[in-house]
Amino acid sequence: MTTFTCIHNNFNVLNLEKSVAFYQEALGLHVVRQKAADDGSAIRIFLADSSSAHQVELTWLRDHKEPYNLGDNEIHLAYKAGDIEEAHKLHEKMGCICFENPGMGIYFIEDPDGYWIEIVPDRSKQVK
Image 1 (cartoon, rainbow, N blue to C red):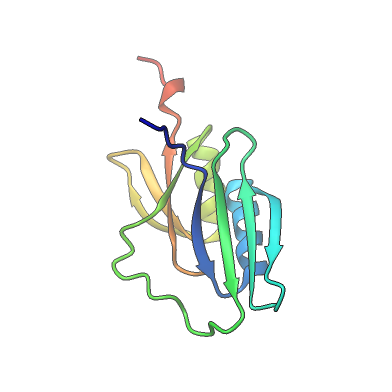
Image 2 (cartoon, helix red, strand yellow):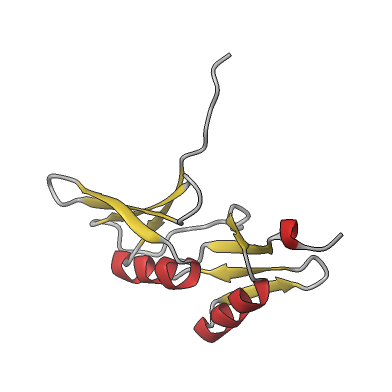
């Protein structure tokens, strides 16, 4: 049987520059590649962190002008924070925290297009 490896997730965005800036500031991601359609109808930017192979693909479509319908928005990305308190302070300062579950020790941030990103502590660093 063949094996599969997750390589990226895609979010469609209305303002590519604003979205890239958000992911850079909120999660420390950096642009690894960019591809534009020859006719200018779309631009895709791939962002990554410094420790995994997984990438976030942001797609801007020239002709799409309305906010994307995210339905119940039950689909999300999740990022592990090396220092959850430091991460929380940054996201609180940015004003992007949209939901917190202190009992589970997690919270969610919201990007400029309304996509949620779960922030979880690095439990491998916790004393047992």
